[in-house]
Image (cartoon, rainbow, N blue to C red; front, side):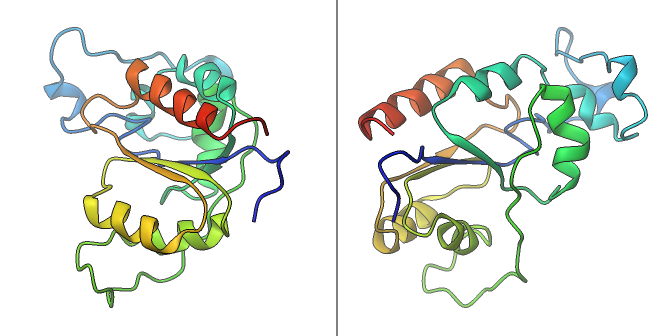
Amino acid sequence: MTSPTQPPLLFLDVDGPLIPFGATLEQLPDGYPIYQTPPELRGLSANPLLARIDPALGPLLAALPYELVWATTWMADANECVAPRLGLPQLPVVDWPDPSYDDEFGALHWKTRPLLAYAAGRPFAWVDDEITDADRAWAAARHPGPSLLRRIDPSCGLLPDDFTALAAWAATLGPH
């Protein structure tokens, strides 16, 4: 369980919440934000999707009262390619085991079990574009601490309402 001084965890997916997707760069509507890669980051990755990361999200994430943790298939590459674009430090990374498909809910996301194991009873929030009611039900039934599973629209990524909801939920937990 968590100590009163530990902040809740915030599990961060990259594709969808931080890199909005659904169209190629050529198919994006007029006005869709594409961000310039700063010269000091240009050698990190040739992945064109990284240009969709809004660098303003970094300070917003850092200001939240959470311990940030990468919960993404980018794994350690998130620290190499994503964190510098957001101005974030190196973050812990959830190490994914082989997915299991033997759950009674059927629609349980393959990340759900490992995230609950990583949290080990500690309060956590998880932002991902693939969260379902099955994940919420499984977490509610098996996680002894508070949890917030917030589905993010992958075509928009994290929005101001998401940050408001994350901050409000963390405030309900009391001081940490």
